[in-house]
Image: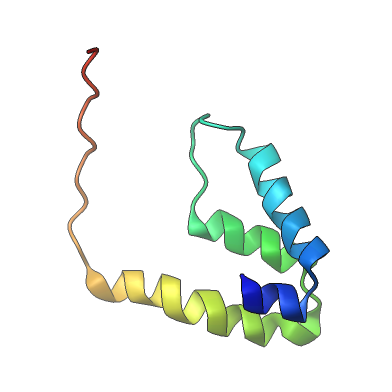
Length: 81
């Protein structure tokens, strides 16, 4: 995020984060994912800097998650304690 703020501007990054929080209100389902964050940041990024987004997000986070092939588990039900 620090690198993005340097390249884009702190205001644009904060605006993208705020937009993500507005769309996915606090605690409401569905919860936001890294893909949602990527899309919001992509909206405020000029075409010239798309390579940066790819390098910082898509190539590392999304690519790494596909390589892991971990089995998905259902979350446990919360107990009413």
